[in-house]
Image (tube, rainbow, N blue to C red; front, side, top):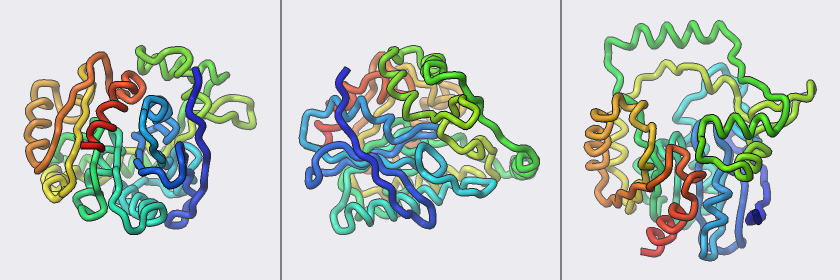
Amino acid sequence: MSYTPSRSEFLAIRGLRCHVRHWGREGAPKIFMLHGWMDVGASFQFVVDALRGDWHVIAPDWRGFGLSERSGADTYWFPDYLADLDAILRHYSPEQAVNLLGHSMGGNAVALYAGARPERIRKLINLEGAGLRASKPDQAPGRFAKWMDGLLEQPELRSYPSQAAVAARLQKTNPRLGDERAAFLAQHWSAQNDAGEWEILGDPVHKQTGPLPYHVEDVMACWKAIAAPVLWVEAEQTNMWTWMGDEQGGRAELTRRLAHLRDVRREVLADAGHMLHHDQPEQLAHLIEDFLAG
């Protein structure tokens, strides 16, 4: 398989060294793509390959993921993603409103950002960044206790004997992922350590349970403030509902949440799971370009 060539760049973003992957021609219209939890910017390779137009795609690795520097702290705070994104957009597009896409955790981050900085967004694409189940006040004591208990342990991520084993692990999570694409992702998703094993390029601290509640109505206030048109894309075989409750309740809650968006187009990709940009990149690329051109 032939892949669209990419190039790497490193920026100093809020005191950390941030890795940014680029595809396409400098000066072409830009699309910023933000990856999800325990993923990397290179994850969008297959979507980039399927784009037919002349685009400059810019995909950072979030702090503590991929080749971006780890924070060094014992907890990652979600608002930092918004501030990092703000700095990245100011660097690459200081004046012009941007086309912004996010998947999963990245979708949650870009949606919050688009509500906080509505003037900075030309069009927004959210790939299954639906959010979490709403927190309840009586959960707070246990949540704080769980967070403090977690700080007493050293989180770890499993290492693998080879890149082929990393690829197999990716395929175990996503059975739709073919051998060639799994092998490509494995080389960007892992690196060899001093012991000769392959470690996932993600800070194990990301596994820690955070102490902050998920105030869903605060999130909805941000969604309501989004001025740009929004393309919402979900997968037909998604497991997104597990983060919002059971499937029946999650479907109703997603419809409620999407109703807060003033201008939204909702699409469902057949034969795809949560990693829809791996499962159906051609269909997704077509939706993206059609939406951005509309």
